[in-house]
Image (cartoon, rainbow, N blue to C red; front, side):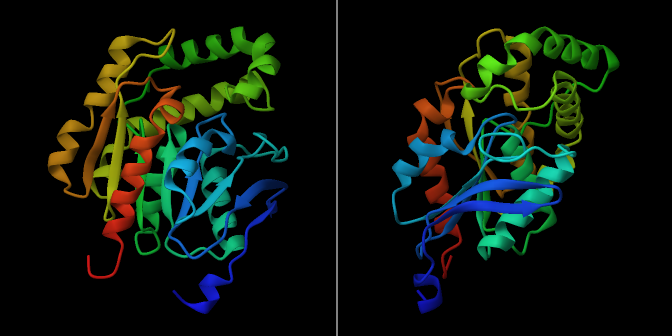
Length: 267
């Protein structure tokens, strides 16, 4: 441990990026920096149980994406904007070689960032994602638009639960469609990963979900595990997609420890 590392203090504040600002919390300390990437409409509060399981031996960095949690509104909510946000947070906090832990959409962000920055990433833990399956047809995209149109009146009510952001139903649909396309094109990204990736795979079905699609998504990584030894399933847990961070935080913490151990000197 260097003296410079030991002096890193806890910090909470806003990090400016583009035309917005992100709400960031950094616990500081000398431990391995772990950067938590949220689900599509979730906030940093969803990681509380995982952080408690890991304890103070790690440096925990959480942030709210644009128009989520306490972060500000923006004009760009695209996937590439989210990628820029990761860089902005890392630069603002002086983080080198983070361990990225992502849930759902955050897991997609994590593997893409690590794929683009293999020398800077310690590794990735993907919590029920990312899976190389997505709707690419217009019929599927129309269904997504219809779902968010129906949800429009409920969005103010479900925002506190991390089920909606502070932008329009149309933007929600656009981001969901973009996510499906990115997941559908994910296979070469995952197969080419040069850093450790550990999956925590949920097995329960979310309320209102299509069971066949969820099962297809989760099974889609099986052949990829054979093609790239950097990919492994750390655990398959009984919770569903929405409850995995709450009910199986211990399994997520175990996966984080696995990846952190691989990055220690001599490994």
